[in-house]
Length: 145
Length: 179
Image 1 (spheres, rainbow over the protein chains, first blue to last red):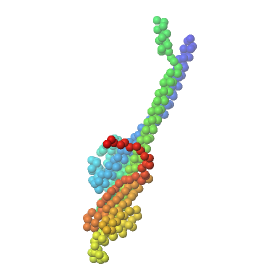
Image 2 (image 1 turned 180 degrees about the horizontal axis):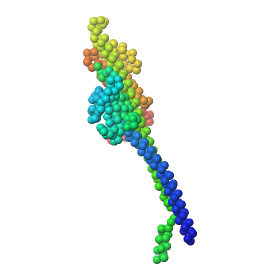
Image 3 (image 1 turned 45 degrees about the vertical axis):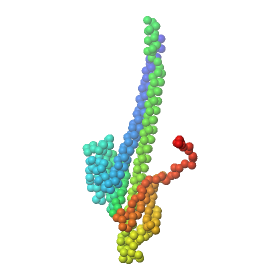
Image 4 (image 1 turned 90 degrees about the vertical axis):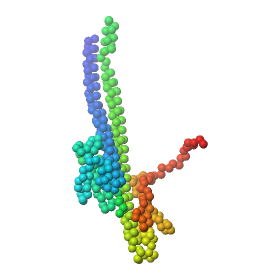
């Protein structure tokens, strides 16, 4: 009787050991799958928000026929810098929740004014803090002489 | 008392295999949830990228359409310039007629522009298409104003149209209102 009891106890502990090891192994794999899903979800959210912002910028530039006027319609804090070929580059910073931010900048929208005569051309690039491009689009608007 | 002791022993006895079953159930459940979340996230990412590509394609076509509009307006300006000098050396001295002929001759040379010129009423309608992708195109139409008008053209429409036929040959039963 006593021998059967100790056998049962050791079998239970062996099973528990196997169960814990297997659970640890499988939960590591499952965690990786959840992390991958979370990262993909984050990328798609950022891509969608960047697309929305670029579309807003493009439409307001087309509506006002001016890059600076178009940007001031939708953003409060715009930094202006001199770009290549005499054009201006407008910078708008966003935090991780895509709210405009002066200090923290997780995402940056660079809007380059590449106006060519009567054709207003704006290159809208949205980048993350590592410099990777999230979304970019070029828009144009012809102003009749 | 004896029965109670046995009952406790049986109820709390160490059973082999129970924890394995519970663990397998938990792992299977977690695997199903993890797979579902990856599938959903991948679908969302695919949709976001498709939506981004559609936006890029649209603005690319829109920019090409704006450039074509600029080229047409350049021709209208050149035609107006010639018509403004028509009083002296034109065969009939009619600026509007010269302008109309000049615009027609210049725009007919343009590749991809559909021109609808009415010689009796002297009205010109010019239209062009810019493909956005395999399914959609940007359709632009403009009416050229008279020589005396300060605004050289009016945009009739600037619209996205589907290139694929979505009409169906199948007949569907439609709800008829009681009259």
